[in-house]
Image (cartoon, rainbow, N blue to C red; front, side):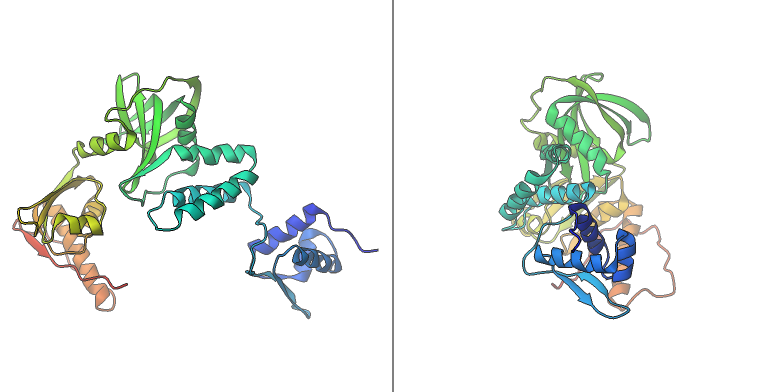
Length: 348
């Protein structure tokens, strides 16, 4: 009498096949604690369900799960399902034409089959908003989940925070919005102990936890979270400042790069524009200056920034010539006169 496969064993077999390109039949039998004949029968049952499984015969034979014309149900663990759902939420707000509606449909289908505890974690990301482009730095997904949940539920939030000067403090705030701006995630919250609105960089937040107490939502200054954050970041004084003159109009610069920090002003005539910006990180400041890939003049900038731009130009030149050279060029302090940099056109 043929053995009837249990659902649990089929799921275990499918999980093994998804986690490795090819499995010897004997090894699968050992892992599942069944006979090789049982493995063959279970593989046939999965094929009948629509999973495309290839097999090879002989002593070295085995099984592999391949891509098929129709996608059968996926077997995902909790963290995999959460990652897929978050990615779909992000894609649903994407600037990539045509993907938003498709991603939203897929997200709805996935959320319908998620367990309730995972569905709540995914929906917490509905409080997040992307401002001024993507490319946020890596932060702990668990931290984002806690912050997003507190924003959604209107629950007081406590956490540790490291300021720009390195000083650490404990905060209890009313969280209102979670936003991605440029390369970073920010939490917009009202801090009762300081009687004012504050923005917190999420990569500096540690140990966040809901306090179990709800708060009454306040009106955000400026009307919405994105406007407030943009204005708040524009007023921050950073260690390194720069003033750049691009030799094209402001419209062309904005078309190439959606600037999120600093001020871009058109010059009379529209043939050039001036960009004033600043940052604590020299690498990011230098990258932001050259990102439009047009000719420019560095009107004002520290010796450290000029040295970083020269180092960047040297690496690009070496890469274009076929790779880095053995000798190391020393990065000097640089002159104070305006520097004109010409960026090559990127080829797609």
